[in-house]
Length: 222
Image (cartoon, rainbow, N blue to C red; front, side):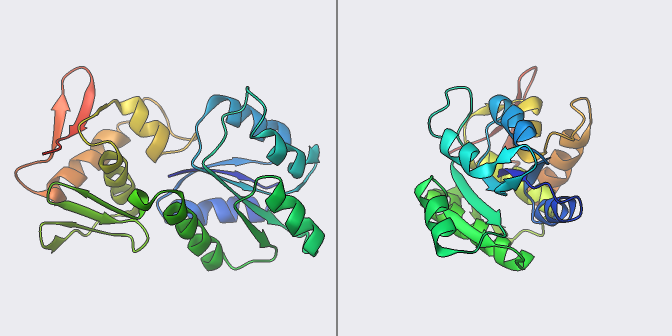
């Protein structure tokens, strides 16, 4: 899952972004509305975590534009993270298109739980995936092959989840970088090959992820 975190607090933004990355999310961080708009014009995000009090404009206006501006790629879900705790503010945020509203200060564990709940609400298929003898529970952060549970790192789990969302499709290295890593990833890095090699080793034989020469990789779907 790729997340855009829009937060201008210099301490809170990086701390939340690091926590989300540790939860196996790919996270891009924007400190202003302008930076957020640039990223939303160029990338597809599953979730936007949006602060409302931004230095160059109200995040509420950006929230309203997500459903109407043809230049912005609307995310699947939006969760507002803000210090505005009045009932009228909550109503305005939800009526403007937010799927959830979390008031600062908040505990990171609650944010992580709300993101998992949004994933389940967005699409039941995201919560529990099954491809052949592979099964993945996104909410519990567990995966199995056959009856054996797989011991995966956060990045390996995120990569397997991405493949399982697109069984039978050929995924290029660039696509995997786009959805499993964030904008800070080096497009020329060998990280995809390294993580994929480790994931294949843990999946065992026969290997379910095939290399398509010159094109990318494919999770074989029975």
